[in-house]
Length: 318
Image 1 (tube, rainbow, N blue to C red):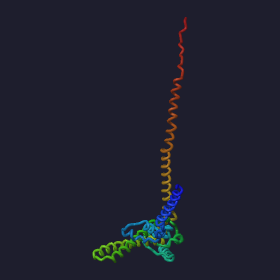
Image 2 (tube, rainbow, N blue to C red; image 1 turned 45 degrees about the vertical axis):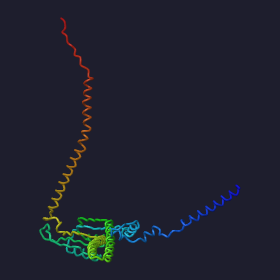
Image 3 (spheres, helix red, strand yellow; image 1 turned 135 degrees about the horizontal axis):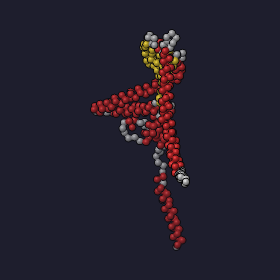
């Protein structure tokens, strides 16, 4: 009896286990196929929904980040300019040479101003200020040609401005504005009420105006980086020549005298600074201990000095 009962329990346990497996099978059935996260991000629609003020999901933000990356972000966008002041014998000829150089290099003349100044001998001589733009790759060659055969190069300054961050920011803003423009056009096409059409049209006009401004700023940065500006001050040689009287140059003598005076004043001022800031504190630092030591030694000598014994002279007895 006991053995029969044991067999029945074993059979019942196997039956229950089979039912459990059968009931769990539907839960493990394959689910509908879903794209991986990377594929979903790539297949997600572009960023216009964010520009239209709707909800913004992770897929949209990732897609916008991928789209906003451009080849410009890999390279720096730097605007390079130069300023020069040169002294030449013939101002008009040098202005013409700089204009021809800029044109031949693929650049252009921004401005040119020629005016008259008075030389040291009282005569009127021309002087000029010219600004040209040349391709950035040819900036060094252009500077060398401008300085060629000059009497003197009084100064030369080169500057560079990295506008990569501003350029990328403008591109991102332009992308967002263009996305908003597309959404507004779709809304206006589907609008049925006149007031709705007018409201959307007003917003569309503002967005399109912003787009034109951003395009202009981007174009200006691109042109400024592609073409370097060179500003040249052209000085006539006659205006820097010293006055000569019978071979004597009083201007040079006066200049040397003023330079000698300036050197003396600078040397005297340096001496006073060194005396006040170094010599005087050093003397005070060394002198105070020496004076104290002198008075202490004098006091000790007075204390240790023995009193003198004076012998009394007695009269002799008669």
